[in-house]
Length: 280
Ligand code: C2E
Ligand code: MG
Ligand code: MG
Ligand code: MG
Image (cartoon, rainbow, N blue to C red):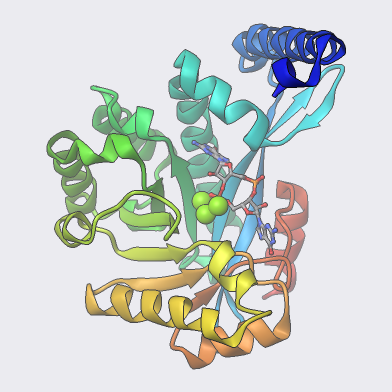
C-alpha cells in the first residue's frame, strides 16, 4: 500500500516501523530484568457459580509495572516473552506466586478452603522438559493441594504436537491438578484432540458471549459449545460476562461458571483479601 501511495507514505511507514522496533527492543531488554527487579504483580479475577454467584475460583493475571511506562498489560509483553523464551521464567514466577498466595489465603480464611487458583500456561511452558518437576516442587514448597490448582492452556498450533503435550497433561491430571482449555472457539483445536486430552473445564471465549448480545442466533454457538463441553465430560466457564442479560442466558444454557466485569474485575491481592474476609 505504501508503494502505491507515493513517497511521503514511505517515510511515515519507515518512521512508524522504526519506532515500533525501538519500543519493542526496549521492552525486550527491560523484560529481561523485570523478574529480579520485582516488577511483576499478580491480579486475580473471581470465577463465580452461575446459579448462586458464589466465588469458586480466582484466575491469576500477570501485570508488569514498568518503571517508566506504567502498567503494561499481558497482551503487550506475553507475546514478546514467548518469542524470546523469557515466558518460561515469568511463567514459573507466576505459578509459584499464585500457589503461595492461595495457600496463604486458605490458612487465613479457612471457610474458603474450596477455592481454586487458575494459572495461564503458555504452550512454550508445556514443551519445557522440566515442567512437571517444577510444578511438583512448587506444590511441595507452598503446600497447596494439587486439586486447588487449575492450569489454563489455550488452543494453539503447538498443541497439535499432541504426543508431548498430551503425555504431560495426563500426568498433571493424574497428580490431581485441574486443566482448562482457555479461549475456546478462537484457536485451532480439532474435536478429536479435545476428546483425547484430559481437560476438566472448557472456557468459552468472550467473543461468543459478547457477540451474542446483538444477534440472537449467535447464542447458538455458545449453546453448542456448552453442549459440546458437557458431552465431553467438562464443566463450562463463560469468559467476558459483562451484562446481567448475558449471565442469565448463559445460566439458562447450563453454563456452570461465569467470569467477567459483571461479577468482578481482576483485582490486586489486597482487594481479594478484603473480599474473602467479607464473604465469611
Ligand atoms: P485470558 O486468560 O483469557 O484472561 C482473561 C482476560 O480477559 C484478562 O485480560 C481479563 O482482564 C479480561 N477480562 C475479564 N473479564 C472481562 C470482561 O468482562 N470483558 C472484557 N472485555 N475483558 C475481560 P488480561 O489480564 O489483559 O490478560 C490477557 C491475556 O493474557 C490472558 O487471557 C492470557 O491469555 C494472557 N495472560 C495473562 N496472564 C498470564 C500469565 O501469567 N501467563 C501467561 N502465559 N499468559 C497470561
Ligand atoms: Mg485464562
Ligand atoms: Mg481466556
Ligand atoms: Mg482470553
